[in-house]
Image 1 (cartoon, rainbow, N blue to C red):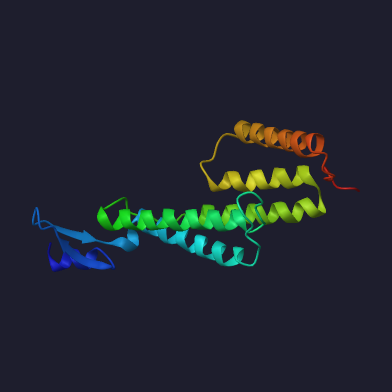
Image 2: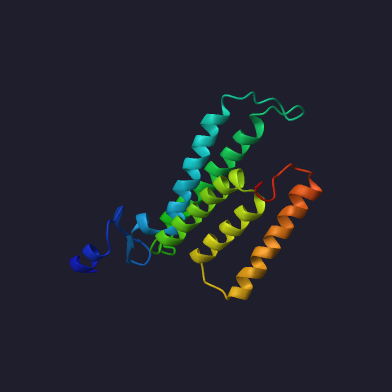
Length: 175
């Protein structure tokens, strides 16, 4: 591998490793590997969950306290993150592609819009706006598909939350 190829490969965390069995040179660009980044993310979430869960009583297996589930789940996330990082170090995996900033932004806007519209105008307008904004984030379907998706989502939400669970959601605005 030439110096120009190494320079083009981006930031290299572990420069190069030579396999003793095959004498091949492996370039490890861990900062761009999906397994490595996923492992770091899982370990970060697990560490935060473990720290936050320490303030709740743990209990025992027979009488679990409110801190039992967060701590156990956080330990599982830490272990899974460690396995993913080891897997990324031992073998080269898929590279992380470019970030889809527009879809990520649109989905965030859709969630914030849902929260605000739900509070001020009701469930049905909030679901309609959230669905329309979310559809713009992905592969655009036909108008018929979007209309059917919106109707199905609104119907299911009303059936589950208002009729089934009896939650007192305002469906439409009071004029």
